[in-house]
Length: 315
Image (cartoon, rainbow, N blue to C red; front, side):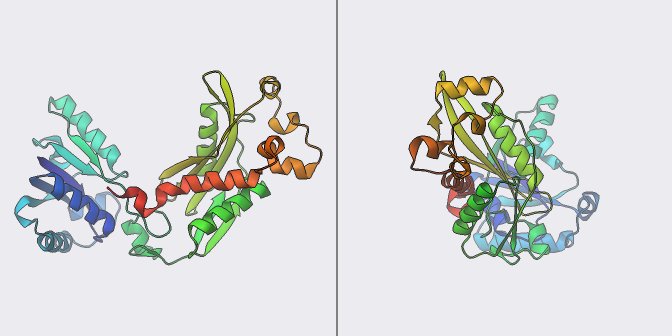
């Protein structure tokens, strides 16, 4: 198989090495497009010279025993020879997958066969965020190790949800210093079906501005085969634009609540809580007397953090 990949490769970090390993394990011939100094400048980046970057790549490739199968070529634009040559596959990260799809669209228009897109997962640092050259240069990480306090913003003013997020992040990243903030974020009053996850994503994207993580939490009614479930979704966006998802356990919602919700009421208005303390514990606690809102939310946040573990991305 003849494969290709491309990049700047300014600081040859673990993410780059995983891409190169996948390419060389997959292909008999591997072509690496290395961004020229002109392309780096055009993209608004700063990097070591082309010759310095090429030398580092060559040293790594030779050390791995891949010298005979790899060719490094100057990448003069974002597509390079991938839109022309008879390659079989292109190796990408989640960040560069979009570019590979653009390459295939151009190849289709030229009457060339599409490339198989092989996506290699991110390699994450110990803060759950992908290792990236800009993060190393900014002094956020050293290799995989986090150097600065982790900044987490939650799109809610609800104290119960905030505490649940704190507990989940503190458990998940026990060795990191974490700073928490919250912001207001309005979404649909009573989300149904797809609106639940959409609301969580909107909240996460708003919260992540100028932070490391933005957390969006949204609860609503999900219909499946005529049965209505109360579900809570969590979206966690990081500063690189990557979003991971989780949700809480769900329970079947009583018909009398569904009828009231369809008339425009909210869950907290319908359930006859005796006092504010019960209301804070939430609907699951009201019906079960076993699990409260904080525990449900904490579980959902942990579910959304699981894809950020190093073991999740192994292949």
